Amino acid sequence: MTTHDRSRTNLMPIGRFSNACRLSVKALRHYDDVDLLKPAFIDPDNGYRYYGSEQARDAVLIAMLRSLDIPLLTIRSLLHAESNTLRRLLEKERNRIAGELAKQQQILNSIERIAREGDLVPYDIRVRVEPDYRLAMMHCRTNAERIVDESSELMYRLFDELASSGVEQRDPCMCINQSPDKTGCIIVQACVGVSTAADFGEAVEFVDVSGGPVAWLTHTGAYEELGIAYHALSAWAQERGHEQRDALREIYVNDPADTPTNALQTVVLLPINA
Image 1 (cartoon, rainbow, N blue to C red):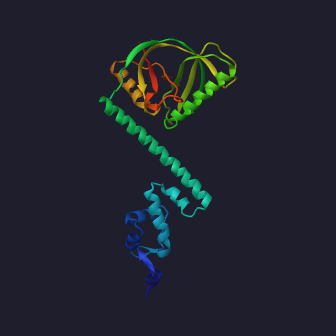
Image 2: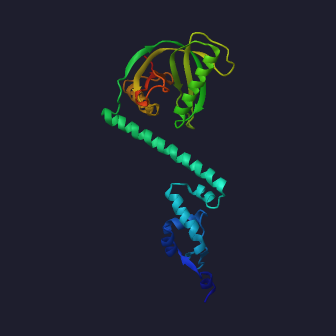
């Protein structure tokens, strides 16, 4: 028996190991390349890979974790993690997948809305002249995935600040959303109409927002589906040669705290040049 033959004693060639562990040969070769599951022995003469029976556990667990759409870098950490680390890593993956599912549900809802209306621009878009506003404002930096939750939280913080100071609140209740920058960051300004200013330090600003012509529509339903309204306004304005002169605005007609999601009304305004 040669040295190479003795080295392969009690080892399985890659094909047999693949069948036993329900991992393709291609996957096993990739896991070798990325140092996730190295063969127990590689024949230096022909490059054939061989695996030991003690490697079957890791191989089967890798197959199971990949079937759950867990990334290879996380799998590397999970394979030999202690209980606390294991729970933390799996909770992180649970949150990631839950976020992806929520996003897919939003996409599905938007497709259903368009199909229901039978129109790629399912809104009645009009032009009006918006008045000037005196507004109390707070702002935050967010992104497309978190904008609904974080802008809602920001708005309620603004309500609390105004209520605690006794400042009279007026319409509109509005968010001004800047366009995303190159990193996907969106600056959101939560605004509420007020009659007088007060000193909140840096917590709240008081600003005057100019009115003027706007293209507008009313969106009924979930805030998560407002992306359709944004695109509809943009397409409408481009088709008619209007230029956007300021950030998009959302005026909230009713309170999500006591209004069913399918009855929420949001007036979306696109400031345009006349």
